Length: 140
Image (cartoon, rainbow, N blue to C red):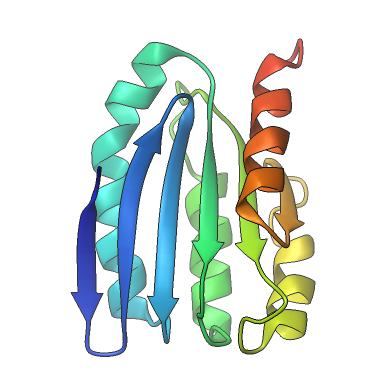
């Protein structure tokens, strides 16, 4: 379930799972691709918010290192989410084989500090389990 988006350098697939929005990213991530996937993700927000607390998993399958503007815009988007948002947590999946994985991990580990609960994982299953736990917390 989902729609694959393409830019000259990469592609993304957005899928829904219970309480989760999962974005699968492939290729060189640039501003164009980021804007495309952000729009696709925003289209799912009303459905997710109506169902209760939810989380996002950003799965970077083979994505290259982002530019500073992408990090800044990502942080700003989460910081400026609507007051009525039920988004509770954001996970990033960056497997060790991903090109630039160590640089990506270090950038994403604290990208959303003070904005929303977030964490980086090496595999999708761990990210899903963490999101499920976050959604069950009393603050959620």
